[in-house]
Length: 225
Image 1: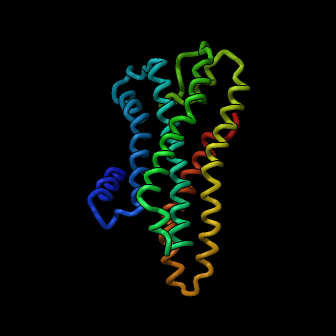
Image 2: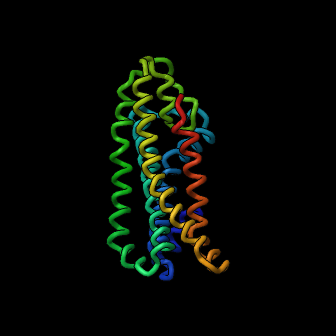
Image 3: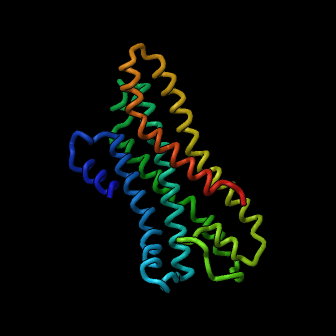
């Protein structure tokens, strides 16, 4: 509900027609889609016992969409960090650098990167043979649970998937770390306390989201089995 309100508000209010809110709108769309890939099926299983059945094809589609959308979100979070860097460290050229063409291009790249980068991981997962059980102890088709029910040696696949997850998360985290290093350095050089507060307030919400988002990803998906 909150993400829908954000999208509608950004589209309706002309005062919010800026790069930051443009990215925020796409981030909200991604959040809605990520939730929609898992929650409806989970609620159906809770409200209608006996309906927690999903075909292998649907399971693959659900996993692919979930991972692709999540990867796109991470890429977009890195883009938003760079946007905040330009806003704080180079404000006079902000509108020139972050013009509509640039914003549209980086958003498209984020979406495409997310969907392309998860093709092989999902394909490799479903090339395994599943014979231990047809029950997944999870509310959606989680890759970790799928690897557990495989009757093959999954060590090589797990290592490759782990390295790819690290590459994706760290790759999107690097621009965030670099951007906030420069942002904090610039803010500390501002002589007035009110100026420092104003500059930091433009980044506070994104910084909080980054800490929560990356913290969850590192804990849930990057830790080895």
